[in-house]
Length: 212
Length: 212
DNA sequence: AGTTCAATGTGAACACTGTTCAGATTTTCT
DNA sequence: AGAAAATCTGAACAGTGTTCACATTGAACT
Image 1 (cartoon, rainbow over the protein chains, first blue to last red):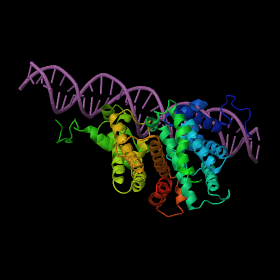
Image 2 (cartoon, rainbow over the protein chains, first blue to last red; image 1 turned 60 degrees about the vertical axis):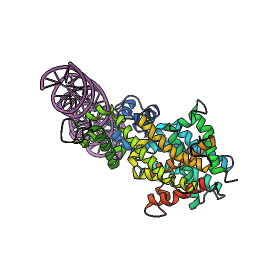
Image 3 (cartoon, rainbow over the protein chains, first blue to last red; image 1 turned 90 degrees about the vertical axis):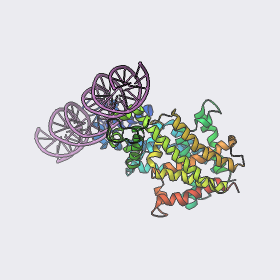
Image 4 (cartoon, rainbow over the protein chains, first blue to last red; image 1 turned 45 degrees about the vertical axis):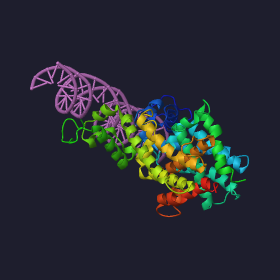
């Protein structure tokens, strides 16, 4: 069965798989994606450099697992943000939640969209992606006065892609500090300032104003 | 003076600087950003592995030069797309041009927004970025019925950021194949299909409809 | 002209990286 | 118990970016 009393300093770690995933996630949070290293992950888990490749078949295998975790967290936040309020409020809250996730976890976020580092066919990743996607889709359905479990029609999909693109692009530009020049005139906390005030305004004028 | 008859197989290459930049650009076009290597760039230019670092001080120095080239090309395309037509048409054309640039040069595009690989303070990069930015700004000014050389007010900047975010996010999602699931129902050439039909529709309903 | 001098490029080293693979170690199954 | 499967190691390999003493060259200055 599962080793519940593991991590006793044995030759066998017990649940090295999870330990490696979390070590990689921690490393991503500390040093960012560009600071990530398979060997450093192994070092933190206290195992040999070859151990991760043994469990995950290589670097992409491990990173895919971390990315799936990221999509899980993102889906949770999107669901929470889309829980209450009018459809317009839910939409706005979800867009802000999307960007806030990127700002809170830049390493995870960058990883999640680096398809050159991931194994896209992995079911864990696909399922987690689907959950995040559906959280947004439900809000679009609500906006368009459709039942919660309906299929998105073509206009709905276009709207969803547009919303996603706007949030995704804003997140990327924020992380790449491309908005600093524009925003630094408004206040010191430019990241939060742009996210908490400017970005909701954009979403509002873009998607919400035309609904009323 | 400048060696015009260079590349005669001498110890001194003559204009190795430009040769390295173009070798790197070619490599990016062939293998993408993840396939880029400083040593391979040197190999293609027919020089030793240490030569690039000597000229550019390291990998980021060289890549920054390539990124500046990319911003130049992007700015040219944006300017061309925003040359004729109504403000709304110009906006739509520029957004499509933005995404088309990303699809045509994924290596360059990815590089241009990887601030961890670039030296942001380099003037060549800053100037080229500014040119691209201004091409979009002029269109926003036209939409808002302001003179061509006016300053963007706060609403204008919000609009510009929103437009940029939408195009940027759509470009990223397209390159990361995140839209395949949605678009593959519409046709085989899904990339071009989404870019030439779906994306203009999105921009249209987002930004243009509210102008008339 | 000849000689200095800075620029330009080399080649070998260094400290890394991801990956592979035979073998050591441990658990699990029969 | 013994056999088989799972787990982890340690050393290798090819490849990377970067550094540094040293070669080579073109230009500038007497």
